[in-house]
Image (cartoon, rainbow, N blue to C red; front, side, top):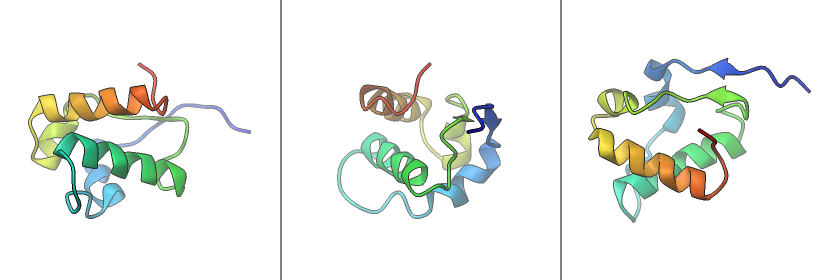
Length: 81
């Protein structure tokens, strides 16, 4: 298995996440859910290095929202920092 780290350009995330704003919960929860789904269905490689809070600008979110989404993903043990 290839364990090399892959950088996913921040510009790919809007397409990669699809219609992630639909549904219930906070924006941070929806973002975390969409990223988890992208990992589970193979759109986002397990070894991917995800962008820092600068993803906020690409998705039209506050940096705090992205940071909260990442905290959720860390709690789910889906990302490490």
